Amino acid sequence: MAKSGSKYRNESSPNRSLDYFVSAWVRRCGASSESGTAFRAGKPFSKPMNVVLLLSGGTDSVTLLYRFLQGKRRRIHALAFDYGQTHQAELRAARHHCARAGVPITICEMPTELFRGSALTGSDIEPKGEATIVPNRNAVFIMAAAALAMQIGYTAVAIGCNRDDAETYPDCRPQFIEAMQEAIRLASGGKINLFAPFLDVPKTYIVTELKQYGVDVESTVSCYRGEVPGCGCCGACIARDRAISYASQW
Ligand SMILES: [Zn+2]
Image (cartoon, rainbow, N blue to C red; front, side, top):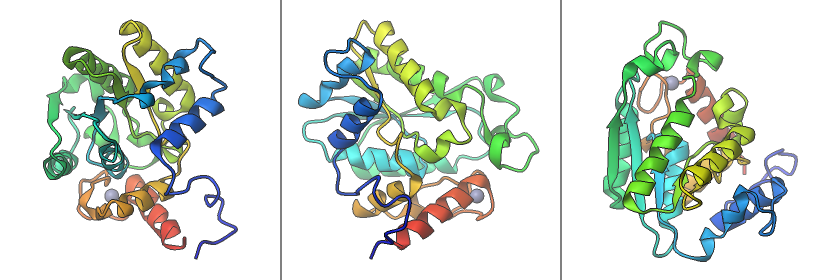
């Protein structure tokens, strides 16, 4: 039984639909269908939406993959990046889940010169906190996904940024995502929308949702050291273990 005092309890019911979260996001941003803002394009859920999903192989993006698979007549194309990260375990997990789900995946090799200096790309720093920031990585990835979406005629890009990420990573915060949505809308002549349906959602919810899809959280790789099921002491493992622990109390 859920703990009534949990701060997460009332924020995210695992039974709520993707449309619910998108609507909540639009409401939170103060946009409406008449607002003329980027969120006006929040209509795509009234028709089939084909989406390029940024898939790292970690818990958040894999959960988003399975959530999108619940939609009818929705096509998904996953996009992952080999950008000089210190391990390939996440990419293996991304390939595994795409194969399991029957979703095509493109793994794009990026120039590693762009992303040096982070604990995730080989710098000899403990992979915790701000040391794990890869500067501006999400801006590059989102724009690349938008380019792919335009190329293949898809109408949306999705990313698994969540509320817990926002504490450390500037390129996971609502203001950033909103700015990217506007940029993509302008760049595509209004044809492409950006969705981050976990933006207001804590990781506790995400691990719970993944379980509901019958997917073992340990089949995803969030560990910054690439260890499976996880080293237990890097920033990502600590966050995921804490989320699993909270979720088990529901
Ligand atoms: Zn770890």
